[in-house]
Length: 116
Image (cartoon, rainbow, N blue to C red; front, side, top):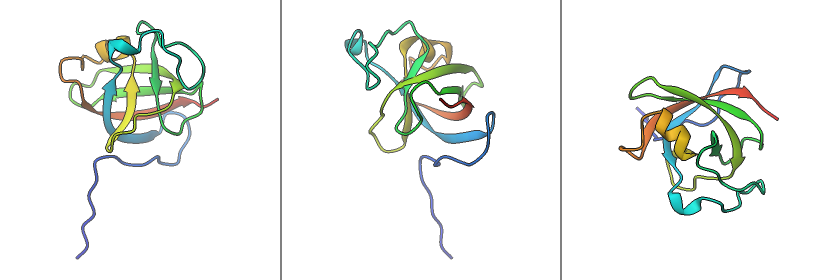
């Protein structure tokens, strides 16, 4: 018998609203405030933005905290995270809405809302 396990599921096919990916979410530290993101925008903790390794800039993703069921829609404007098992880095405001700031890392599900 072969058993394969992992921390993050890769992207799944399907249109808007389908589960795109599952894994761990983190959020940006305050030291990144005002720094340029990979898209050229400045990171603003008050905006609902996020970093993802592959989704096009401008894509909108619904992120659901699997620990408490809370969700938020974010716009992808950066690349990352680059830590195994982590699939998205969220702005401070997005993390607060998901009530994940105390934990720092939480299991999430991503659903594609729109891809630019």
